[in-house]
Length: 114
Length: 115
Image (tube, rainbow over all chains, first blue to last red; front, side):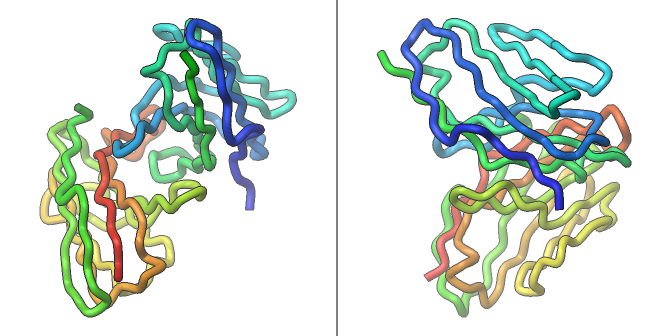
């Protein structure tokens, strides 16, 4: 079946630099995408989401870009901080909609070096 | 704080034990979910409840038995588990299951170890 994948399992960045975490999806019918952050010992925490009728969405220090042509999703974190260290994973929603149709990737470990 | 509370945070049980995981959401949501998170694997959906009715069961072994007495509470009853069932079990909720409400709110999970 189709699944969501990530290009890099681990990403190390220097504090203050920008981070870019990538996600590839293979279902062209996916209409909604979401990024979660999971810190050690905690459950996944919502970061940002985007619908397929958009190609960019910005939040506080985070931006999600969607390229439907190549089925690629990215999460950009500006001025990365030590508190950003966590596993980040994306999920896609395949219609018909509903939370139970979210398909998750395995995650990218972001390590922020001081 | 996400508004979804899970207890216990950690659980160690033998293969012959019976235990239950509890989840409570304070968000007024109508849908609740159980996910299994194993190391280096994507989250696996186990069960979905909508307005206290089970609407999805993703081929989960019968040794896992969910219960949803009301829209705020969800349980996962465990019995005769296997060591490979050791994982982080996550509860989540969403407003409902309609388009526009795909966002899931997760609890902190129960880290289960089966000996």
